[in-house]
Every structure is written in structure tokens, then in C-alpha cells.
Image 1 (cartoon, helix red, strand yellow):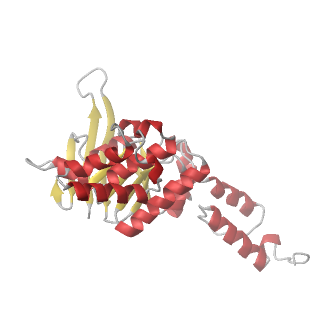
Image 2: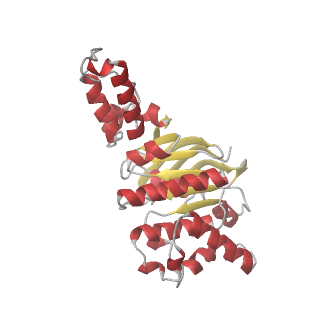
Image 3: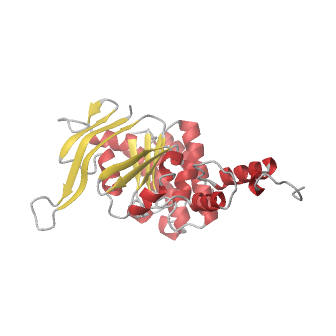
Length: 294
């Protein structure tokens, strides 16, 4: 197992008037190579959780192991951990600081002690992987659009060649084309490198289309953990937590109530399209009467 969390609890500002419990007895196993969606309402604890995975925050109790080694043991190399478990923050401005995009992306591998040629090669490779065009590489990161800044921030983490990539709301504020492009490049990176990707998102459509596993955090605990179909078919429970299923799931539920025989657990537009076409071809979309449908 790549990352193992055992009975992790964490409270902000312990012992003060501002004390606020954030995580409570969380246990998770995150195997190598998974595509994981992490969802939860605002304030549920999901952002606090991901900052524990690379040691930015330290749990009050419990153990986190990376590749079988306790990251809280004396002398553990936290700097090396943060190179292997890369975190891209929700707001790219929090990560971008160099004079040019290229220098920003080179910063991480340069601090890994690599030779200049390898630093350059890694930066170029990462920028190409996220689809940021070469004409932007010598610009200031702060001259870029929101989507381009996100690509630059992701490239800066990828250039360190992490084994785990954590992205906090990477498609927030992007138009549909921008969202699709970012997720497409992330899937390509996963397929090429085989890295674990953890996607924190409020967009259930993104999670359903991209992830193979969904973890639901509610009030600092793990409320659900399963495939997108397993989680989103429990949409009534999700709604009580301030969440929802993808919109297409509700559309299909309404179609089923109208008499169209569709399978349970539809979570993407592509699945809905195929199921509806299959229902019409079999005649079940019109109660078995196919007269006039040809």
C-alpha cells in the first residue's frame, strides 16, 4: 500500500477558545496507482486530510505510513516525502512565485539536487504533459489565465516526479472546455506514469467521469468509500450531507419513474446515452411497444 492512515485525528487551535475538531479517527488505505475522488461539503475536513498526506499538518493521534514507513518517526525525511506526495493547492497563486513559468516549474527539481540539464528536461516534459503551450513558458505566471495558472502549478509538482499527485479543486472556475482539457491531461499522465491521483472536487460530474474510487468526508469522518456507482446511488444520503450525485443520475431516475427501463448507478452522460439507446432498441422505453419507433 502506498499510503496508510490509521486512526488519524486532528484539531485546530487545541486548548484555545478557537479549538475546532477537523478529523476524527480516520483510517484509509490508498494503494498505488488509484484514481481517487475526495468529496465533502465545505468544512467537512477534506482539505485538512490531504495536508496530512504529505506532512504539511501533523495528526494529534494516529499513524500515517508511506510505503510501509511511519512518517511521524524520528528523523523521517519530510522533504523527500513532499517530493513523492505532491500537492497542488486550490488557488495556483499560492504556488507560483518565480519570474517566469519555466523557472517556476524548474524550482522543485532544482531543489532535489538535479543537474541543470535534467532540471530543464523535467520542466519541459511537465509543461508539455499539462498542455501549456511553449509561448507561455517565458511569461510571468501572473500574466496567465486561470486555467493556464492551474496547468503551470500542476507542472511544477509533476516536474518533481511524484508517486502521488493530490489536486485540490483543479477545475474550479474553468469553463467546460477547460475542465475537460485538464482532466484529459491528468488521465494521460496517470496512464503514462501510473501515479496515484487524488482529486478533491465539488463537481460530481468530474468525479464520476474521472475517478475509480470515491471517498466521502463528512464532519471529519469517512462517511462512504466505494466506486462512483456505489457512492452516487446513495444520493439521498449524500443530500443529507450537503452533497449530491451527478445531474445525469437524477435525470435517469426520473426517466425510470416514467417507465423507461434503465439500470441503476448511471453516473455519466455516456452511460446514460448508451442505456437509453439500448432501452429504445429493446422496446422497453415505450413499455414494450415499438410501433412507430422505426
